[in-house]
Image (tube, rainbow, N blue to C red):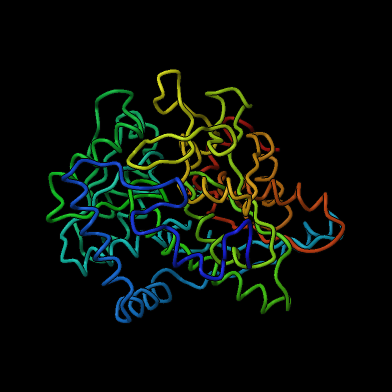
Length: 405
Ligand SMILES: *Cc1c(COP(=O)(O)O)cnc(C)c1O
């Protein structure tokens, strides 16, 4: 399919280009030392991760350990309530550890093993990526250093406990605001020192090349499975697919299955409390081009051009930028990016729980809310939503701040 001059039949061969660019976005803005490490990782990715042996092993792991393929569920009661549109969800909440993040962590850790590395390094904010990577490290017998700000360590005690139980080393970052940004910087510093023995495992389709490409490719299992399953279930393609966008990994992998199809694609960002800077994390909606964390993309900036403070009720979505491929697909118009605020996502959290017996993650609730909204504007057809994770982690917070609705 050709869209705005881009041939999506051959899209994955050409994007990103050899320097890691999706149009103007992407690249690798890092120190010379890290450039070397990125080059080594890129070469390993193309030689090792594209080999038959690696692909077979990852497929076996996905089946036997992760519990893939995850199913698609038809939301029958919710669809009947809404009217003539059929809603479906791809159940990444049923992936081991309860979210899609393990899809790329298992890929990255398997690559580390093939490269002969002893350790995986990463940062974490809310702790979800740290837990997924600690799980992968335990599976492969790799050491695991997770950098986390002191403030986040206090806020995310259950995930800190999980990482430690899984054998990871949680490294406290005590400078600056002691949250995600400082943790990213500390993890990159550690990687620059240790890259001979370690590999950096980023948590989304962000960071310098090759990470946005690698993470998308490892996550594309979601979209490839979903397309085949949906056609098997209904005999046709969905009319629309919807996913939430934080850094953009679950959406990038899910969309990859449908970019070349006549399917409307929606990426949903968090509007939080509203459109004022600092009240949301909708970087594609309100951001401008800039470089942070080693890549060029659309980002939310403060008056000095630094990453702006962002907010969302869902901690997995509050990142001041999104992956370069999303910025590219945004400008191209192939994916429509829109927003959902806190309130609507909380409503959707309860609606899916009550109507279908599925408690969604607050991140995924943004996609569910948009899917419901979209269905109300359609006279017929189908909407497939990527349910990126389960909501157990969010229950205490919701009951404390919103009560039972
Ligand atoms: C981390 C997380 C997200 C957001 O990350 P992306 O890279 O945008 O996918 C979404 N949903 C869940 C359940 C998460 O844990």
